[in-house]
Length: 99
Image (cartoon, rainbow, N blue to C red; front, top):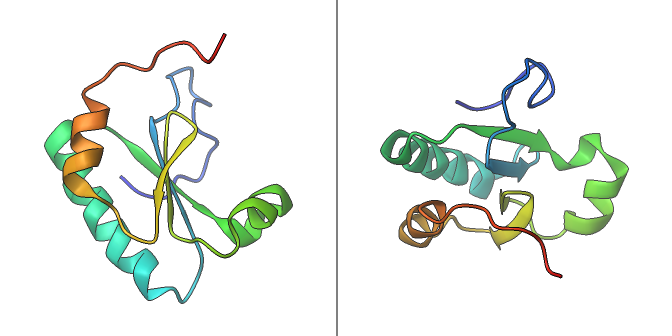
């Protein structure tokens, strides 16, 4: 799964755990999409792609680091998808935030 036309969770399902922040004409983003597709196929996790240039807050935070991988809304890495690390970390259930 890649880009969705509706907001994650809009149909009542929980949002995907994986988000890939990309931009147009970004070679590393194309490579990252392929890696995310492999990880998603292996783990059964859904993922969404978000264009960094579509949201001023994302642009401010991530403009110089795309592609950026988020797991459960938290930054997991940038520039390259570390597939084995991502698979391992997806095996862990999301926990509560810091106390």
